[in-house]
Image (cartoon, rainbow, N blue to C red; front, top):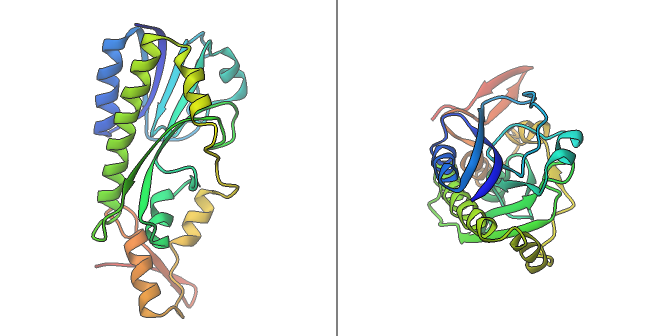
Length: 222
């Protein structure tokens, strides 16, 4: 059993809920914080592990220093896609493979810690954002269970995972919310192929690509 764990998940996420229930079986003491906003304050405590799964919270340096063993984040993308909007960029780039990455949280910089695991899967031609995200969250959930089980057996397995995946490196490029917002803008001069690629990579129920015309913003509606 793990000793004292903080789980950072996301509200209304079925995979966060499933992982929370799984952790309850593997932990003596489990603190859960499911959020839907950034910059939520955390109370300093001596946690053995912190697991972050789709959480908006960015751990502060003083908080990370208090963690006894490790803070681990499950990133919804491969190491080649850092930051925000990984699925959007991957679909637009037309890559054939995608995946999820587990890594240590060692500072306040996004997606920069040592990589401890990577799961890869193929992208199908008909996959849209919704399907690809669901595949990714499933992958993250499976990945999280695998890592948690290894840590339950022996915390030294963490060092083994780090050494095993030492060849995996993060991309030098990292995308922000501002970058993603700009990416959602459709260039009025683009050709049909570029237009359809952008629609595929950005159109969801909650977020829409847009154009700026005579200073006014118009959202795409299918």
